Image: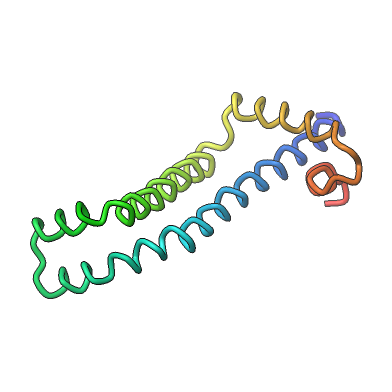
Length: 127
């Protein structure tokens, strides 16, 4: 393996980590905004369900609070999607298709100005 290949693989790994951090950060922000809004709006329903839980009460509690319900399900859905994506890459490593996509993205980053923060973080060889 050439020295340039190892540098390229390191840069691809840094770009993958950057994408991973960005996705988890967006999930955290989603839970802090939409998730807290949903839980705050559904708090009365949760108290009622705690006292008298029935599936009908749960259904109507969610059906009559549509916006908080959709926000909560959105947060749950993207958390599950990113968890599945992350565990897939953890268990099976990156697929060849994903590596090609990251290499193409890396080429675009390398065309940015040298002072661009993304290029400094991904393309620096000091790490």
